[in-house]
Amino acid sequence: MSQHQIISFLLLTGISQGVTLAIVLLTSKRHRKLSNVMLAVFLLSYSFKLLLNTPYSPSIGLGNYLVSILLLGPSFFLYIRSVVNPKFVLRKVHLLHIVPALVFLVLISAFTSTYQITSYEQIFNTPSLLLITSIFQTVAAIQAMTYVVCSALEMKRYQAWTFNHHSNLKTINLNWLRWLTYSFLAVTIIWWIAGYADIAYLILWFGEPSIQVAYFFWALMSLVVLVIGYYGLFRPELFIDREPESISNSTKRLSETELNLYTQRLLELMEREKPYLNPKLKLSDLATKMSVNTGILSLIINQGTGKNFNDFVNEYRVTEFKARLKSGDHQNFTLLAIALDSGFNSKSSFNAIFKKITGNTPNQFRNQLS
Image (cartoon, rainbow, N blue to C red; front, side, top):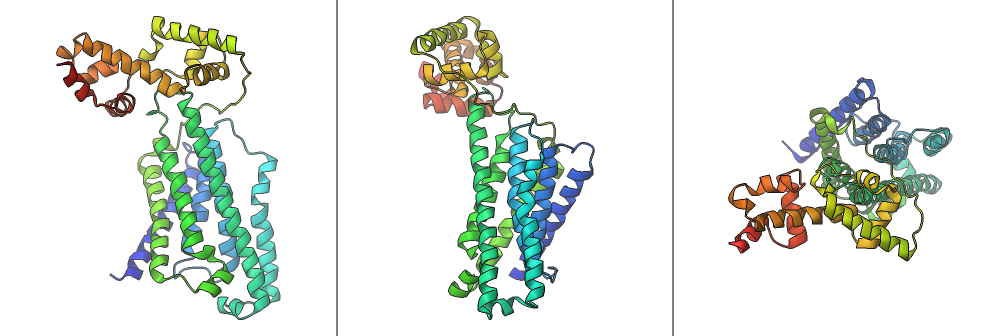
């Protein structure tokens, strides 16, 4: 099988899987959340972009290409926004996201009919057509990069928020969103650098990208859809019933005296009641015990202890684990059993956190006690 046949197979597989998952998301009663609708729109746009690189590409070409690019960014951004904020709803103002695609569709239809464009080569041979086409393509490329960067920043902000609100990140499942966001960012960057963002002027100046580069880029795009399809069809729990708490920045400032008093209260509470032994402890749970709102408590932990909530709680769990080992618990129980009793919820997260905080593995620490 030739390289071209392999890439065509990957493209067609990615297209079929993307369309299939989009239909499942749009028609299934279990997938009615806004986030899954946005993901379906993204998958359909993405699949159509893949179709343009196959022998089955629609002949109308340029208009479809630009409109698919202009829909990719907004649908992806709104997907990320709706996942990290379950209270997010579409409003009339959000229709502005699709205005560029509609405007471009009208302009390109008028453009192609006015100039009687029948082939892409005609654009390269006519300076005025080349300029107008390049303007269209440049705006589309800038729009795509802007949205994907904003999506990455949204994901990064949510990731930082989770560290300040959850002591157990295993249940948040950030890996899926992180992988999807940064892989889409990588695809977009490669499209800009290796494919000149398909801008006609750049292709004319620097020549067509090599077929090997095109093959690599198409294969990477197909891989993104295939992985989304795998998670969507075989691990659908990641696409439904995900209800993270809304991100909120509302809080008030504390004086230095207030901060010190609250910090002392918090430390005494941690020592006295040991809430960190609850593996599902969240910032809101601890805020209830402190009789303050989550914004105030986050400020107390961040400024009063110099840590985020996740590190603050897990340091207590590590200290608890070490104390139990020093008391000889490891002679009667396994390390995992002691870790679970100390507030950790899994072996993998325990090992990673213990090594991060102490610089040693649990086994190394136990051996030092012998």
